[in-house]
Structure formats: structure tokens, C-alpha cells
Image 1 (cartoon, rainbow, N blue to C red):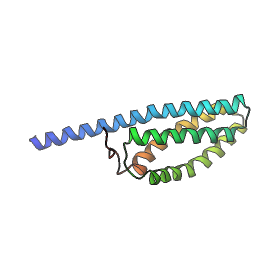
Image 2 (cartoon, rainbow, N blue to C red):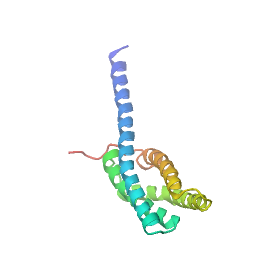
Image 3 (cartoon, rainbow, N blue to C red):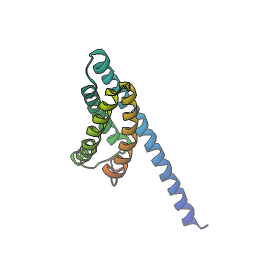
Length: 148
């Protein structure tokens, strides 16, 4: 193995770790967004006795705003246009939100506990949103923000 191959392997390995750390950061920030979502969902669904779908939609919106803002800056470190990134995230949620709201409402209406529905929906959202953010929203702009 010559020097160039050793250097190439080193940087490939560093890149692999960078993506692992990116996934870990996304997970930790998503946990904080999940706490916001579960907290507000609990307040509306259990304390205020609202029906499932408005409780879910409001709690989802609050967690999405938090998740987008923090992940853009700290996980993906993207300097791309905020409006474009937000529109791409909006496109994701234009599909995810009605599908998850309708399916969640049907599940809850057929007797599945609202919290079980909420947790399954949140886990689906977590995986799909990471993949969408990494490979669509921030595909070419990861690590472009200047850090101080």
C-alpha cells in the first residue's frame, strides 16, 4: 500500500465517523424534540382532554420547528438558504403529516392507546426525517457553515 492509499483510507475512515457522529447528534436533538412533542401532546390530550388529531398536529409542529432550527445549525452545519431548506422540510411534512394524522386518528379511534400511536409515529418520523434531511435537504451543504 502506498502513501496515497493510506491517506485515502484515513480520510474515508474519518468521513465514516463524521456521519456516525452526525447521526448521534441528530438522535440526541430528536430526543429533545420528542420531549417537546410528548410534553405538549400530553398537556393537550390528557390534561385539556382534546381529541387526538389537534393534540398531535400542534405537538408535531412545535417539535418540527425545534428540530429544524437546532439540527440545521449543529448537526448538518448547513449554510444553505434557510428558506429553501424550510420549503424542502415543508414538502416532507406536506406528505408525512396528513398520512400520519389520518392513520394515527384511525388507530386511536379503533382502540389503540393514543400514546402508543404517538410513539410509533415519532419513531417513523425520526428515521424518515433523518434520511430526508441528510440526502435531500442538506445533500450538498453539510458542514458548510463557518464555526467559530
